[in-house]
Image (cartoon, rainbow, N blue to C red; front, side, top):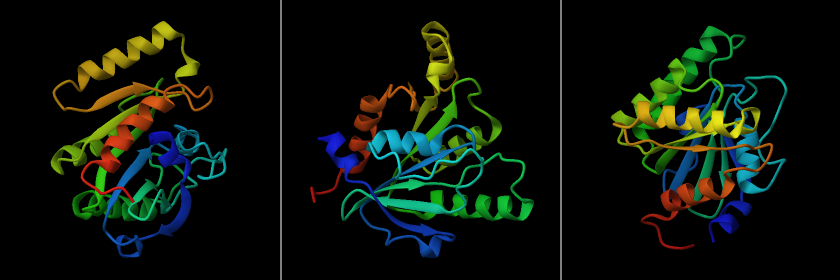
Length: 202
């Protein structure tokens, strides 16, 4: 059931401000991560549509909130990538303000998928996003992407290390490889629970 839900994903709109977002009803899950962690590739692997979210060899290309509709009342949201040095300070400040307001005010937001490069987990801005989630009582799920870049043993060690560090925060963590398709089913299950929680089937 969950795989079918995500295969229906279609581009809806892009928003530069909170006021431009779709009507705040139903349920949506946001995807965030540094500009070089493969966020668009994770979304494309999740939905089985490799042209849905824009992928680029130039980090920092996602500069708006991109909404993808799964149904009339369910959405995925691709948030602007962060941590890329070439993004002007004025732009970084704008998106910091927009994202903080989004986390604090968006009632339909049911959870955050925080994507990290498994080789560089829990960078400062990752931790800031987790702090925002905790303050907003928003569930968070960490996807350690590019697990194929490490041996199975090394990837497992990073997974356990991140779980230990966040054990008191209530954040779930998983391994993922957009390149190999590893972890898609586990991510489907997490998101389906968030998106179908208290809503009628549409």
